Image 1 (spheres, rainbow, N blue to C red):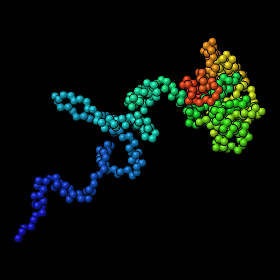
Image 2 (image 1 turned 90 degrees about the vertical axis):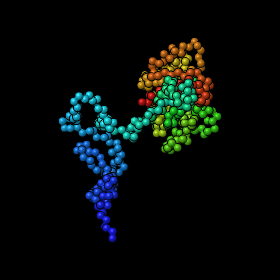
Image 3 (image 1 turned 45 degrees about the horizontal axis):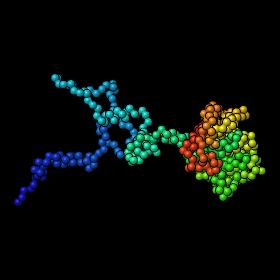
Length: 426
């Protein structure tokens, strides 16, 4: 008959070489209620030195807020004294000063930033992304950038930086609607070509399309210069007179578009071509047109024709935000430009005269006997800015004006004019 097995003796025999196994079994036997089978969540509590159990966040928002919050600074004793250190053993070499641990440095940095706002990806995205260096366009720098596949970027040249600054000024967002009147006392000196060239430039750089209005009482050709004579004749020849007749029914941009012509993104209102009614536009009628245009366009150019005394001019001048005075390098053209500014200053438009932009167009390519520098000096002191447009056959022929066929210097001059116009709206 076999003897009963002593359980304790058997367990002791099995566990003789396995002390860890015996300790784990004894723990379960002695503290079965405390054993859960999962690891508790333990975080250090620096205030009392005790380990506490914390529950996970109840929502994503709480977890995100906890992640964004800076770590708490280490707690100091009430006296503010530094923690005590163990004395050095007699005869031992002096120990080197202890370096702060990485976690201590992080806590110190967080404590230093605790008084300021905490950056996040929404309000401060620039803190997390390195700024990209501008890419050079054209020239040696642009060629080198392309040749190296972007590996070598010398940045934009001084000329490109100037062009970028002009583009920024032209494209500046405006709060409200503004208009610029283009006028002169002498015909044939680049007034309409300047209106078209600057209008196309504004359309090229601005997010909102500009509008150009032909208010010339002498059968103006603004739309023909922007579209070409042939295309204009093929379209429905609606003019500013047609718009005035039906202005009460125009209550949307779609309705207004029936009276507009489009040269790309430049929207135009044609002048009256019938000589019997071309000079009938009054100041009140122009102001009605202006109020309608201001509801849909932030920038408008007004081609005023020759002279400053025709019927609509008082309405044009009293509603203009700034002026372009067209002039030429001929002596007579420069004199008339100066006379225009003097007339404006003496008839209640001194502010417009002082902030005017004088544009000298070298349309006729005057002879070398004309001192261009002297003419520019003669005009520059009585206006806000003077800009010269070089001789260009694309302007001088009196036909279609398109930016693609103009010389780079001419396009640059139109950009400078457009930037000066928008600057004047501030």
